[in-house]
Figure 1 (spheres, rainbow, N blue to C red):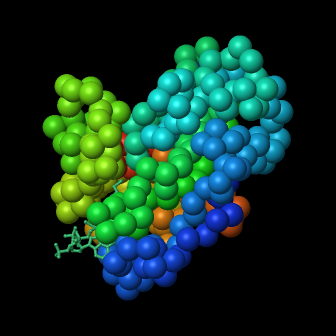
Figure 2 (cartoon, rainbow, N blue to C red):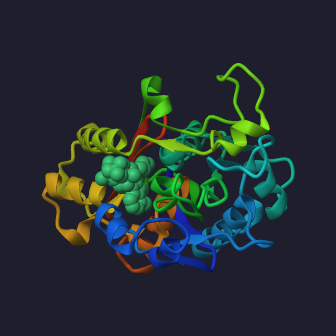
Length: 332
Ligand code: COA
């Protein structure tokens, strides 16, 4: 039976470090407020004149391919998860394909926000299982700092969201002991407006005006407390779903990599699952919430630090705008 395995993981973060103290100079906030509520100490913002969503995705992809020992010419499919593509259209997938020099292969975008990387992983996994492709690049990359306002009215988003990219190379295998065991995808559009960016969009049913831009209607909006309450429930559900589907229990997990939404959410899940600190990977303190990029950046760092070894049971889980939530269970 065809299965897919993660052959390599990589990441790229911009060199521009923005600390909580830097933000405190631009808006009424403090290191204490941000640290206490989110766990974030610093994040990266893109370097002007250098970084784009696709260029950062390309850097992460090259690292993943190099670690996998796979030549870029072997890639047959690109699945690119992003919320912040360069253009309104086309998507970032084709720009990555152009940058990597792979003309002709399919390159698709997935717009599922913080669950986007697991959705993209699932799509690539299905194509490989079906036998259609043998090698796929799955990428999550975001430049969110451009869409947030560094001001009092933008501060609840500004202190959380940041820029970065991560990638995984998937390769066909027949060996279940080193493969993606299952992926689990969910959404509930009832909550679409609880974490969203309205413009440019059609639901307003009128044209965008300069006044709407001045009024800040183009800025993203988040109902932080509702997001928090739903996130902790859905994270728990979707992790349990993945374990039950494969007859594993929480004690079998070698490493849980939650989407880096908020350190308090990760800590809540860890406590509920009664897992040791070493078994839940967090790097939000250094990178903030990078949406689609957070899970592959975390996988890449965890792998490099020796926290993921061949044969380990790794659980990925995410929750975010949509609402969407998802998990993946992987035998590394
Ligand atoms: N610095 C200082 N004060 C801030 C602030 C900031 N960056 N952002 C908001 N505030 C203020 C608010 O204006 C409010 O002031 P008021 O009481 O005078 O009206 C006060 O702090 C409390 O705001 P509230 O939104 O209730 O804060 P909170 O305790 O819920 O924390 C979040 C806000 C966003 C940190 C929290 O709701 C959260 O973590 N939510 C989940 C977000 C998340 O994970 N999103 C990603 C999903 S993928």
